[in-house]
Image (tube, rainbow, N blue to C red; front, side, top):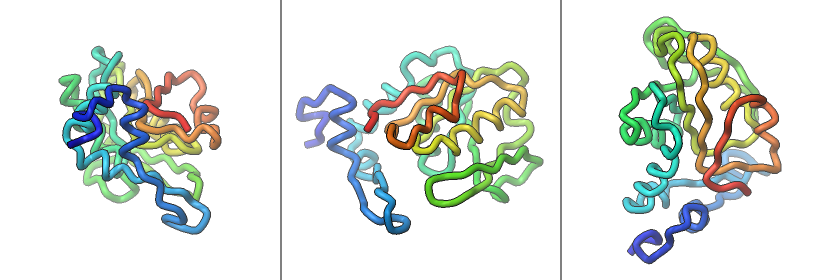
Length: 180
């Protein structure tokens, strides 16, 4: 029986029970938040997807950040009957792209989105699993803006508040289902 079926209706509690900590992954000193137990629990996963979609009925597209953001963003897009746009690591998209580099807690990276992924003025919800230092989310928000669309908000499962990621997102509404 899942935690959700057992009567856990609080989404924050559901996440606490279904996200496990993996120390020293992908490198020493990092505490990785593993969402695979949540994904394996169908009713809990459905409840979390529904909660992530709350308040965003008017978006045109949902942008999911590679890789775990894809897992969450596609069903959120379906829930909202919005389009889904993958934001990928550099070199993974076949058409002309915008690129944005950023820093993360254990290195640097570059994200890309197709130049034709958004229509001018579209409202875009950005979805990811974790907001940590804010670099990935800020890079994605910049890509959305460069493509002519507007960021309606950013929603994540988990926010690591001690890393102050929101500070890199001034003026962007951010919602986390669980903050630690």
